[in-house]
Amino acid sequence: MDFRSLVMHNRSYRRFSEQERIAPSTLEGLVDLARHTPASANRQPLKYVLVTAPKTCAELFPSLGWAGYLPDWKGPEEGERPAAYIVVLGDDAISTDIATDLGIAAQTIMLGAAEQGLGGCMMGAINREKIHALLALPDTLRVLLVLALGRPVEKVQLEPLGEDGNIKYWRDAEGGHHVPKRSLASLIVARHD
Image: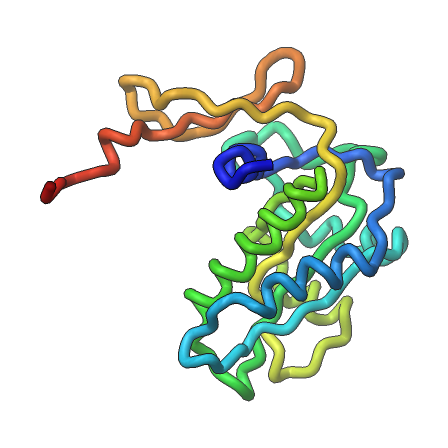
């Protein structure tokens, strides 16, 4: 898949084929991609917890907020939940300045997953304290983000942003997920050709 196709295929998926498990080695490979990306001052403060065990996946699920713009939807039903998670942590003993590293690593992992036909959702609306306790993490590690992963079973379609400027994603009657995107022309504020 060429790079543009890979980026276009990498959407925020929220429904998966839960019974199609993901091997721990697949998650290790995704983290290995992130490990090789640039890091601010080369400090490399990110750490990861790989979750593939169905029991732990089920215990982690209630700590995740699924779709803020869909208030009547409480997240995927059983059978459509993620098959695996990567919990991204910040190691405060190394650095508390992680914002740039977190974005680079998370997007790299998601692109790597998309290349393998997987999909996922970067989740920041999470109960960090509960996740920290569930995973029995030391105090020096902060829960930053949860990457939910699996084989997508939903179609995500990009839409041009309407004249009203409403950026909220929505679902159609068949469960298709629609995501408005701003135009390229609206994002480029100047050109110095």
